[in-house]
Image (cartoon, rainbow, N blue to C red):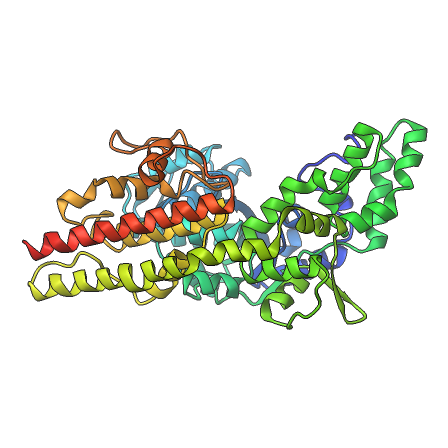
Length: 529
């Protein structure tokens, strides 16, 4: 028997309290072969829900679905081609382990030897071109869908990571999207479906990346806090594992407080119960402080954050905006007698104690005008001038500015108050300086003296050195690459780790100033050619 209030990924449906209706709804979508989105705040139980549904699908052969779970953070995946190699390799690994793919086979002229480790399969595809990998992706899915007489289902967790940090452009998702709406010529059923699982709704992510590449998603399901009745059942289930009778009674009597403080989030409730057992006293909000910080910095920046702060501080003069509705859909805020409230009173305590909303707004406002001017008046103007000057001279282009460039410039000017916002900013820099200058390889179109410049080296590592889930402090891919400490020293004059919002804003401003100077140097260079 597991320990009481133990934290782990739930895979058994009988341990997944309060989700029966949601599980049933998802299974109905499985039967209808829908592409779906499963959305929920951090630590609200999305992965546990998905794991349980996947296991239920595997146990019910009548559904005729073969599910595969993907987490792109686990494989250090960086490029579009790598993403498809990873998906092919993990599919083959699962097929091998299930004894459906045991001998070497050839697909689209590419031989694959199956293995129990997806990395062995990925190595076989290392030298295959991106175009052939995309062809292989479709061929292998269609082949095994027909062989198994099942729909291949890809469950993509943390899907925002895939779009922001792996795919070089949103169009990189096209192969997944296109095959998901096709029908088999033989069986006339769908050979492939996908789920996207994350903390941000698809239309909101579209605002950031400027594309609708997932527009075949037909249903969105929200993983929200569970009801008091279901929370009580979960609490009693965990308390049954306590061997000390007196302690068990104490903890059982705390169920009402635990529900109020957790807001009905099972993970938060388990943290409260485990801490009580460990210390023999009821905790305060600080036991969840790191989790609340992750939730806020990861997902609820800008308008959402301000709404949460206002409600936490008791303000009610809040317009019913899209951001307010999103927070309600996610179950973070509720409404009672025309009054909004934070569903978790511990989260409310955290917001009141750790974030002074007005001070944060004032500190941020200092940077807004400078950042906006650097991006909108300096950087975009310099890039446009470089493009036109190069064209007027009859020379090859340097920057291939895409039609959806506005979303990238938006990420440059969005103020960084956290490591996660900084990663979005750094990824936008990378797209401009590396992907917009790509011919066959990144940076190919840059003049030689800019390909390995100091600024180029900083951009190369910037998005991989800060931010949860995307850190490569010790991964040096070439002798020419610098590390985090060197990057910080170049940008800020010190190798001190950014700690608070002001540190991240200063780092963002330093990068933009260096970028402007690099573009000015590039413009002088091409004028003097």
